[in-house]
Length: 454
Image (cartoon, rainbow, N blue to C red; front, side, top):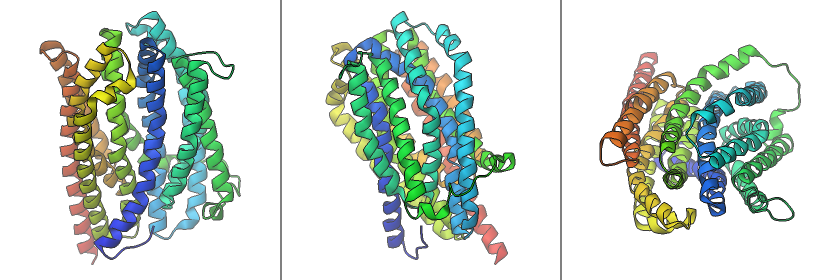
């Protein structure tokens, strides 16, 4: 990161940060994409099992991992404020916190997984696949969380191309492991959807080891000597990260878990409906990596400018990021409309699943437009470290508006299971509008404070 004096320079720097993040996010989600697609080729039960397992796992992972995202704005503001000497300890404590969070999830899963699955009206085979998909996947949770802590540090330095390279290396590794364990190649048993969990776990270990080696040996990361000293875990340091990270994590959890809740509520429908919904949501979520990447880039850029007290520059980056996201979302919506048939055929060869997937994809056009507007605003607000109000807004818009309205549409209108998608669109739209109002307020207050100090 470096200061800029014109919009042209900001465009160049923002794209320099954004493009590697985008490739990284697309690559990371491609792992889930290939898990779903390759499991679907193994059978509808495997696709439904991975769908249910993912619906339980993804909200927990993204929510808890959201806590670690605090490292990015904290480090970015330290760099902008020229306080680099504080960065090594911040990252070390972030790694300790990542391990503690991972162990918490493992312990909770040990006690809660079976009771949760028993509460769901799943076919026996689907329930078994879901259970063991999660058990095998969770064996890689500690390296996954350590990697994400290191990634936040790497990205905050503006070196987003490094995490891009790591992801591009790990993607073929994940596909290879999927091929081996889902379909039973090279002497391995054919495990179907369960094999996707093994493949994901092994890939998490791979990415963590590569990231550790890079931070230890490659400049400029090695100059911070992250592993050059041993310090005890500090609860006070954890608290500083948690104050920023917990609201981020819960806001992300409220947003992502509404998708999981919809999938779980659809468990009352047929296996084909669950499979079609998962296929459509999987592809739409893949496209969501566009605004999510812009959001992450904005956190870094805005955080850097805020740390240096350049409020006008922070505001310009916010407008730039939101504009880019909206344009890309319109292109994505057109792509879904034009290519929904070949997209649906990627996930299944069953004609009923294909037709339902195409139907759900039309609704996906509208909610990804709302996502494209709201996600960059969240990223900008994180750059300001303004996270508490965002948490409240996320809960209200998604859980008090989106999910209840989806249930009503699904149960009491002709829409049926598609009614849940209408609820998602409603919740995301309300969230985007309220977040925009909050960003305008934060920027106005920042400008007013600058005038007073002058």
